[in-house]
Image (cartoon, rainbow over the protein chains, first blue to last red):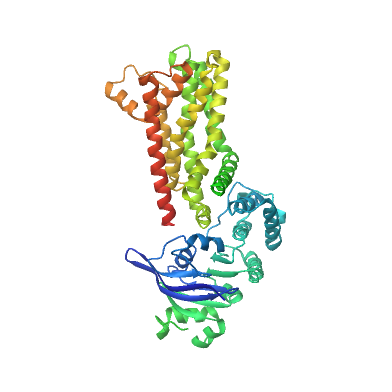
Length: 248
Length: 250
């Protein structure tokens, strides 16, 4: 079953085309990584899919609900963790979870269930009573991503989830994201090639708003004749006659 | 409607916690004006009528509300710049619910300010404790709404670095143009008219006159009230428009 169908999605800012007629399908339960250099259009794509910005043209369907015409329904199915940490600074971790749960109209019983689910999934139990702003950067990031699960989304957008984390915190988060795969579809953007390699079922490579490649790691290696994602990425984004082609 | 109200109350509770857990906000909105009230009373109350408690306490109430612009603005600009608000935009929360959430969260501070400064004022001048005092406290909610509206507007426009500078315009405006720290005699007619057009002096006049029991005069009470209400409505309309625009821009 297709969780996301994107048809010729386009976003223009004045004379800049941020996303150029993007078409793509993402299957339910997939972890799909969008790779690209800065300004490739990854974050803009996620913003359009989550209703944070309107598409200039084209449409996308989240479980058959149009982002142009049925965004309220779309919002019930998705959540997002932004590049920057997005937590209520002076609230404890537990208060943050309760805050998001109440905003998503959960009952008291549901809120208790949600707290248990979040504590178990992210091992946040030991920091539940700590004020968010007093936590280390790694913990804040973890809490920020955990909060995106409070609404129990069917699709989770993770924009640069491990940006700025040390290697241990990053590996821990990878483990958590892999565990989430059983429960939801995940679309993540990242600059870290090894992250895409470790987590993704499929990879999309964008440049200047265009999707240059979509496929599995093996398909990518086979097309580029390289043996790792980083070299393959460079080949596609910067090299040779593969430029400007969409390899499906 | 019920769901919308629940979301507003959830946002309000969160904002109240953010404000009261910031010691700086309590220092500027409560402690500093309280020290000024006591200090100015002791130093100047024998020198000029201006610093008698029945004038000073209402003046301090409105002066302390000017800091609400700073703290409302700071809260919103930080929420915007840390992506906290962007995350919430993905939820079902509407822009007017955000605005109500911010505005309502500051009202308990407003009421705390009024009660505290009138209570302390009443210790020095018992005449403050009159039936009109209840109405003065209620009216302080109206005057504070102007400052809160300005805070929402500035918070929607500025980042956390510039919000202090921009908000200080309102704080300085309330200090200088309210006429509470110096007598208006001696100022030229143009300056007095200018002060009467702006909301600062009018806000102070409303509360002072309510405490003094002057509440049925058009020029001394109703007109200033209408002027402050007009500024408040405009501040909120512009704030909501800018907030919505910024929400779409995201």
